[in-house]
Length: 288
Ligand SMILES: [Ca+2]
Ligand SMILES: [Ca+2]
Ligand SMILES: [Ca+2]
Image (cartoon, rainbow, N blue to C red; front, side, top):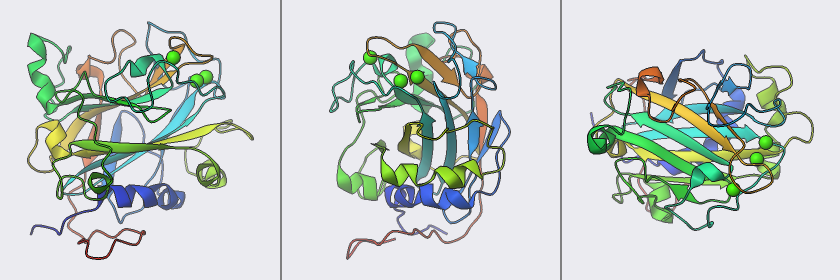
């Protein structure tokens, strides 16, 4: 049965709050995306358990760089939330309005999608033909975006309507938002109480930034929700401006982790038929 149009971004807005009721931490390299109305858990990535890109140096500790992520999905697409802890927020290499920029030279989160689970050792081989099944999508700390190494370059959509109804009211492939401040900081105690949260994560006064991504399945070359996809996250850390200092992946190979899908994790996409609910009021006339 076809569900009513979803409201991916509205669900994301409620997502971080829902995460406070975390159902448990996932063990890498497999994560699970649950339907919007289920409780969700965080996966924690630290300099100890993550993979450092060998083009960069390792973070000096968790206050330098660590993060947690979680995912949810529905029939329209996938939402990913990444909460980073970084003592120096820098974004001087990308204009805040850019949708094509060197995200890797600023504080940024990159989400890697392999929509057909091909697990190629080089996702950009053969002219990048495989990238129609996803690729690399980045949000920068200042709100810039980049998808030039996906199958859909320069496709980030800032349109508010797209954010509220990704993949149905518009043809948007992906959208997102970066947030920091009191609303995010208010989650600290709940996240610290989440199962699997490592000691020292998010120290008092640590600077937290939330990166919210919403992807249509179309951004992975799919017409409907697949059973599972290849998946990875890389967080770029620029401290003090200029080029990046550290890059920390959830999983992967230290050498060229951004193209080696054979070492990606797996995102299992639960297929549970239940109504979608969100915790945010909808605009009048907007369908669920
Ligand atoms: Ca740092
Ligand atoms: Ca920079
Ligand atoms: Ca930084």
